[in-house]
Length: 137
Image (cartoon, rainbow, N blue to C red; front, side, top):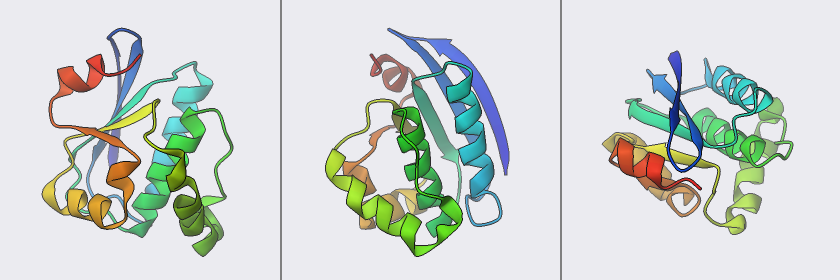
């Protein structure tokens, strides 16, 4: 997986993290680490561009959840803890839509995974980049 980082200005500064390739056990911790770096650098609004992610495994779900928790200033479950990390997603789903992380243009297969796991009720999903950027703040 390749990751790209771009800064843009909407109502608030938004960081766009582009994910390119499958999101799975081989690379999910890279996504978490990159989001942590964005947060540490002062970024508070993150748009995850999923338009170039053809496949997302369960580790990808863990990564998305960990990124959401990080961006709201909390400490996520240890992503290497297996089922504990998966259960943390389920426990946290009640917190509602995330204000600091949104998803852009997930492909059909990834969108299906988000729907089946209930994460479409957790992440605001946009198909248009400009609309997504304008939705922050």
